[in-house]
Each structure stands twice: as structure tokens, then as C-alpha cells.
Image (cartoon, rainbow over all chains, first blue to last red; front, side):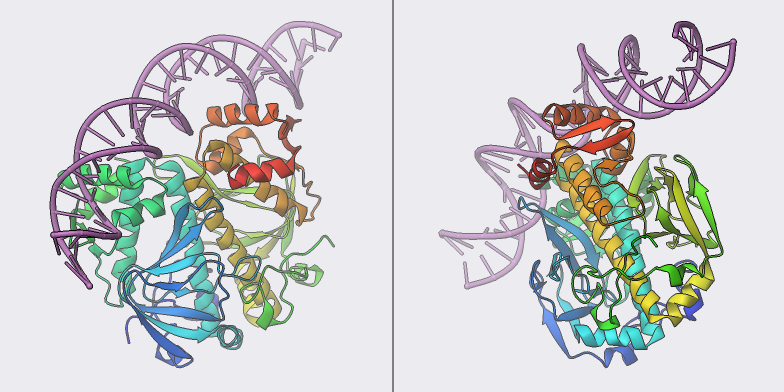
Length: 235
Length: 235
DNA sequence: CGCCTCGTTGAAGGTGGTCAATTCGAGTGG
DNA sequence: CCACTCGAATTGACCACCTTCAACGAGGCG
């Protein structure tokens, strides 16, 4: 099995009670047996679309997925990235539909779960319950962090911060994820940060000239994590 | 009892499985009995501070609370607003400390719960479990919405959208919350939206001249929700 | 080869920031 | 009742970060 990701340990000591999950355990082989099927999707393919009815949800076993929300005026915003170990498709909007689309950034391997079966499992197995809760709390913390990033930092700072965060997550994700090569286009960075394609290109150019990052074979490569971190903090 | 807020109904039909909570039920009088004490706080007072150890968490019974995150460079970002029915202080960062501060926007009445006792209750009572999970999922959806708002809309659009969202929440919150008078300063709007005080003032001026909103006795007053909604959507 | 997506570059302009001075309003004390 | 104070809001002048528009280059794939 690939590294599993959301610790429960004992239910009193989960993610919400103390710090981040230390020991990986949950969403493991035993859990996987409840899947109803699997899907292999290529880079660029849709897992599901905003507004759709979701009777299934998905556990990402391998690859990167972007969650993208479309505003009333047609603008697109990537609200989160899902890495191996994440469950996607579990959120619903006020009408019971998918609040965002999910698109593969790399070739992906997904396990499908029946929606109501999954929540029965959550209800009946305290370990799954705790693991799911901790995952959602991580999602929330990440959303708040990204909100602060987008709201407060300048162009280059936003880019540096997002890259660092993704790098750190990739390092702990397993599922064949490379921690220095992120399968992103500049357009996707822009879509996540609320800035334009063109401006990302300009910033990336200067960060490349500084030897911080590179852009090879359609993926972002991190060259100098230390200075990138300093830049994200505001140096 | 004031309106309670997070439905569980049957555990298979909670917020994550279908749409938003329809029937209010959870965090009610029965739940309240587990509190260890209460606090009355005046406008402007801190409930807890970022970085602090949190052995308690809080159920907001009355009033408005802002959750504010401080970045490494000292900038402040309001990541969420808590209304009656919300539990705050349950999130922890990677080190097990509070990831943000909580400050009262109005006079507040809070119920305190022992942290580990609360999570034991979550674990043992499926209704509390479902209610808590649904609340966190609502928090997450709101965070994504606010991220899209801050990342994509223009100054006036951001303001309009946030006001509409707060208004709608206030309408369903109970706890003596007025749905057309929001206890916010322009500075707090700015802190939530990632724009400056000065610019909020300019935008508010033009929205006031258009008869959309007013600013009376230190609170924001919504005059024309309909046109405000249109403005948020992009008109 | 033609096509498409992705990335790059330039020029011009606007949205929103910065700095600083002033006013307003509520609370306090004389 | 008025003076004083302090934070919140307002206004003006200036300017820069980032957008917009447009054109072009590079690589992948039919």
C-alpha cells in the first residue's frame, strides 16, 4: 500500500485535539476494500463537474487533482489541490450538487466509493470517522492559509508561498508524487492565485533568473527551497 | 433556547450527504449541559489569541466573532466570521496551537467546553458527531467561497458579495442577530477582503450614493439587498 | 505541415495602494 | 453644556502593481 494519510491513533488524540497527524494509518488497505470500483484518468480529464449530482466520492491513490470553482460571471478559481490520500467529491453545495469541478493535473488513479455507504462507514467506524474529520479540518486550515496568501501577499510572494505549500504536501503524500517537480502549468498557478497568466509568466521569469525555480518538461521544478521559503515569508 | 443550527436528522442524510441543513436541531439545550462555564465579552475583546494553547473551545450563543490570522510579516487577515451556533477554537495548527485569534465584533455570550470532553462527546454521540462534521463542512464551503471572492472580484464586488453572505447567514443565525445591521467597521471589511481601509471607504461612498447601503451608529446597514446581490454577481 | 496549447514579450492604462491631512462621532471629564 | 480625546471614516495627490490587448515563439500531436 502507498502511504496512508490521516491518523486517528486514539480518538481523543486526533488532528483536532492536538497537532497534525503524526502517524499515518487511516484510509488504508482495510478501508479500500469498501470501494465499488476504480478509475484511471489521464492528465487533463475531468473527475466530476460543478453542479453535477455526486452519488460517488473518490479517494485519490495516485496523481494530482485540481478543484476548480466557476463564478457566476464565468471566471475560474482553483480552490484546492488534492494529492494522494485525499477524498474528493464529498462536499455538496446548498442544492446537493458538486460545488466545484475536479480535473486531473497528472495521470491519476482513483478509488470510487458509494456516497451513502461511505457515510455509513464513517458513522460506524470511529477510526474512519476520525480520519475523515481530520482530513476535512486539514482542508479547512489550507483554505484559510490560501485565503490569507491570496488576500495579503504580492504577486511573487503568492507564487512562492503556494509552491512551498505544495512542495511540503507532496513530500508527505506518497502515491508516486515527486516533491520537487510539481505538475502545474503557469495558467493553473494563475487560476489558484487570482492573478493573470501573463503576470505569472513575468514573475516566474525573474524567479528563474534568481535560480529559485525552473520550468522543465511541462512541470515546475523547485531549485532553491530555502530562498523560496524566505521569499514567501516576505524577504 | 435560541435557534440551534446544525441538523443531523438521520446520520445518513446530514449536510455532507445532501444539501444544507434543513431542520435545525443540534448543539441544543441537551448539548449545552456539557459546558464547563460561560463568558460574557464586550465588543473588541479577545476570546483567544493566535499561538495560544487551547484546552477549551467555545460555542457562540449570542453575538459576532471575527477569526483573524496574522501572517509572518505582521499583516492581518480575517479568515472567517462566527455567528450564534458556531463552535470556535476547535481548530489547531501543526504545533497544536490556535491558528488564529478570535475577537468579538459585538457583545458576546459564549459557552465553554473542555476540549477533550467535547471530542469524547463527538465520538460517543452520533448526533453531535454529525452536527460537528456538518459545521466544519459549512466552514470549508465558506472558506472556498471567500477565497473565490477575494481572488476574482473587483473591489466593489468583493464588498457586495461579503455583505450579502453575512446578511444571509445572519438571517438564519438566531442569537439576537439583526439581519440588516452588521456590526462591522470598514476596517474589518478591509481586513476580511484583503484591500485597504482607504479603498473600502471610497467604494462604500459610492455604494451609499447609489442607495445600496448606509453606515449608522457604527454598523453597516443594508438598504437594497436586491441590487446588492446583482452587484455581487457582476452587474 | 497545420493546429493547438502553453509560454513570452511589449506597450499602455486602470484598479487599487500609499501617505498624509482632516473631519466626524462617541465617550469622558471638566 | 462644552472641551478634550481617541478611533473610525473621509478626502486628495501621487504612483505602482498588475491587467489588458496583441503579437509571437516553442513544443506536442494529428
